[in-house]
Length: 125
Image (cartoon, rainbow, N blue to C red):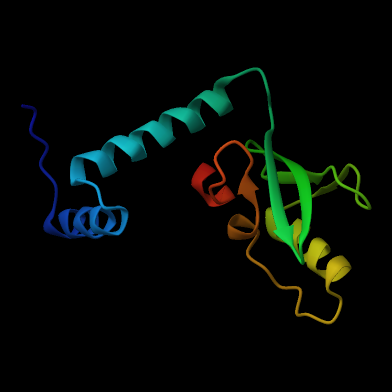
């Protein structure tokens, strides 16, 4: 059986994740490695963007994220192709349009989700 040395802090974190998911620490590691592999496949293909989405105010908004530049182009109306310099800037535009009375400040890395996995965009950083 292979052996990997980790710090106590890392082991504590693995234990916490395992208990949340109801799986073993080994399965936590296997799942994380699989996600890493999937993210690598997405960024190593000929496609230069990753499809992302958000659901805000019961409205689904889709976009394309460029991992190389961190720009995000919203493909849904009314933005239809408008490119934003950061995920957060795009998130602010969505909130301002769909809920003008709300504070628009949002962390775009958690606001947007990777379409293929449903995970936060932050998982691609």
